[in-house]
Image (cartoon, rainbow, N blue to C red; front, side):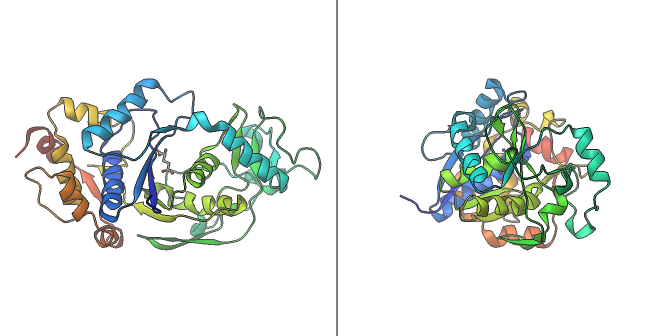
Length: 327
Ligand code: GLU
């Protein structure tokens, strides 16, 4: 069995778009070129946004792109017992507490707390509500995990923390200044993203996390949670993001750039793979590319040089036209 394991972790809350295609094709290519195993985990904990339709869309997109994986897909929502056990472990170490505060209460207390300085600011767009330690309960019953219908937070240790990213190098920030005490359990009875991702990656033996650089700062917080759970940090690979012609990161509003819409308009998986090769500096736009070509062209050095030159992976109307109609 492969001892190096990566994962694909789509959130089935909408249609997958070209940004997902870039990140999943890079993950797949790195894995297949180096003999890593690939797990597929559908991150469907947000019951208000996850849907069966989006789950099917994610599976369809991966197959359409030529991305395969090893073993059965896992639904994150089927493993809440695992997340509960992790919470019990943290509670036994006195690291989590009940936090029934409303957002307004947190915001008011946060305004009186020190602002994170620029070096500690999260990425643009990652607006986080910082929970200041002044709101922690006094020692006692609230430092437990009994009532799973109550928000719980993790007492984040103060101080700078550094992770090594395979593409970005060292990343240092003080998570307590960015997040304060982050939410780890939600009153809806499920873990927060930050806890769930760490627990599930540890359970799956993930050694290499490949994903968009919008989560680079979160990786620093996740490394603290991994320590608290007694796990080992994976290697991190945070990829540059795909942006639209105005430089905005692709999101739900870009439904025309969803893989479903593009395929309906005539785009082929071979051209999407070719675009990935093009972004890696390995091919002109023109023909189509096979999965095997991708596996040899998406190399760590090519990705590093994209990061070093702060290259923008831009989807212009010309590119969309070519994807749908060919040269
Ligand atoms: N499910 C998350 C997303 O689609 C990715 C989480 C991760 O890779 O850590 O944004």
